[in-house]
Image 1: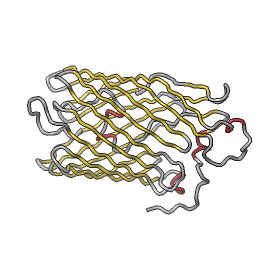
Image 2: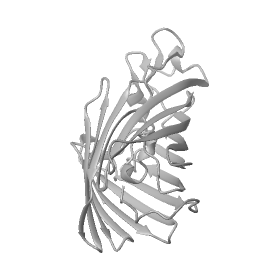
Image 3: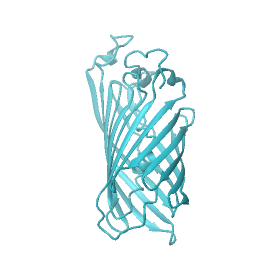
Length: 309
């Protein structure tokens, strides 16, 4: 495990948030195990195996930096009949003095493009609650009027959509979780909370090596206004429908190791560790992420074995 060369000042994340008198709302939470909970980034994706699934996840990012991102999330989604899927996605994100709580309802509809290819159209709508506690942290100019407020609180609407197309052993998707450019006044016209659009492209292919072994290369591309393009490439291996091992690379940011275990017929547990390779890597000990998935009992006819995506 990496040992920091030197310690960041307390809550340095504050300095990353503030720039030219403007407070920029953080990006949507980042997940390494997105392939196990795709509906967090694309509302068109839901479990179609005649059942709902519930997924809990926890991510602690940049261990060793005080005030670094910490994310807790819950997603419940699934097909309620042959065509319609419903779900809900909730997350709480803490970064330095700021706390974001987001809740979104999900609705999707399936279409058959061919006998073996389906397309799902999804929409999501919800509320984003944002709070900043100005009493936290140390400041170079403690007399700045900007920090004379104890806290700031606001709620902003969010609406998004996505497309997910898949066959027997492949998939691809495009989504924009929030098409609204949210902007809110904090203290004056120069101090705003502002959220830029997030655009996601996702794709993957499952290779059946034999009855006991499957390989799944996948890629996630995230484009954000006024930010560098983010590309995640991963390879996961499924053994005996129970054990999963994988590796991932986030371009110019980190390398990741992933592991998962099908605890029982209905429970799956996954873990990932990110090793930072960016300049910020000198100051943190990596990121940890846990995910627990529960498949609710099936209410319809038995489906084929899991499709591994």
